Length: 390
Ligand SMILES: Cc1cc2nc3c(=O)[nH]c(=O)nc-3n(C[C@H](O)[C@H](O)[C@H](O)COP(=O)(O)OP(=O)(O)OC[C@H]3O[C@@H](n4cnc5c(N)ncnc54)[C@H](O)[C@@H]3O)c2cc1C
Image 1 (cartoon, rainbow, N blue to C red):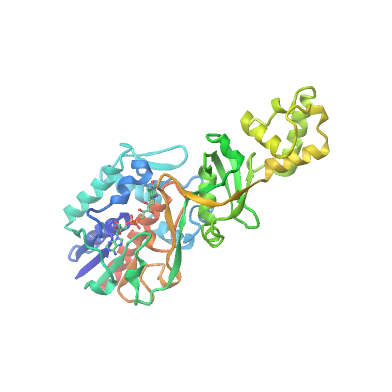
Image 2: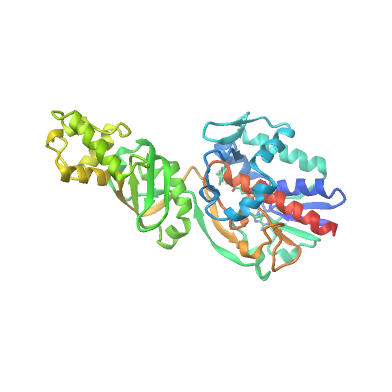
């Protein structure tokens, strides 16, 4: 028996290792278009490899996996983040979990993950053919075939009947044209909200003003939640920033009133909500047409309403996207409607399986994308093992 794996990335290599352990008598061959396996893993997490997450900050799986969360529920049930940690630790990789839930090798070196996977493939006798780009799955002769080609290369499925969801990028920062806020580049607000006007897409977390627009976890999450919508809009949309986090309008207005009442003789320029830098506050005052020299006692109900509005729904025109540290993932791919969610077998093409980013599954940053690669690879390996043993 032979199983072929197309793509030696995180999902392909992990799947190949699991297959050799589950089916010791079965030959496993991995075809890789590039010159070496695991090239992307080597650069993940800025070279540190954020390989999974504790999931402690995630209350609903949709928050981490805007696409494919139903599949991830099953996949994590079969091979969880805890299983991933135990798996790598058993193979000698010591791990560390950051306060934000991100898990890295203690060495802070992605190459430790690469070398561990390469060593296991060699020990278990997985054959890897590099510089071997597969043009179409029909080229490969095997009892089972796993496609783990990542975000692109869907043309290799042409003629297979497999249903595909159009692919668009996810995880990017927003360009704000020549908006004056760019002069505040470097400003960080630890707990902001970001939303796309007229949609339900909304995210919270730290927000960073950059010299081209806005970035930071809140923006990256929003780019993930709204990836398909933003593509449809040609990356032109209205961004609404809440500078004081999740607080409601009444609370923000009440706190503003109290702040101004406590400092009646001071100028507005020198009295501001704690979360904001002086430069950002001045920018917001100017944006609502309020003179910075106005005394707090002179701020009437209309001024308070304007300030509350800008603190809660400060509006910016998105006019494009930029990469975030070269890190991105692909939204779309093999439609989950076409896949048996227990085994990751194609419903339309017998003997064909999928794992990793090639599936219509993608996540926010924080180790969730690699977790999807490990979990779906394990699910596919177990599915193949069960099917071939029959
Ligand atoms: C710079 C960067 C940093 C990232 N950092 C993190 C992080 O820290 N944590 C995290 O969770 N996620 C991170 N991600 C996302 C994560 O790396 C991917 O989600 C994950 O690598 C997907 O694994 P995969 O095996 O499905 O695909 P890939 O890793 O993309 O592997 C696919 C492989 O298939 C090969 N291939 C493609 N087409 C063919 C073909 N026709 N024939 C043969 N071979 C083919 C490719 O050459 C490639 O080696 C990062 C992404 C980038 C770009």
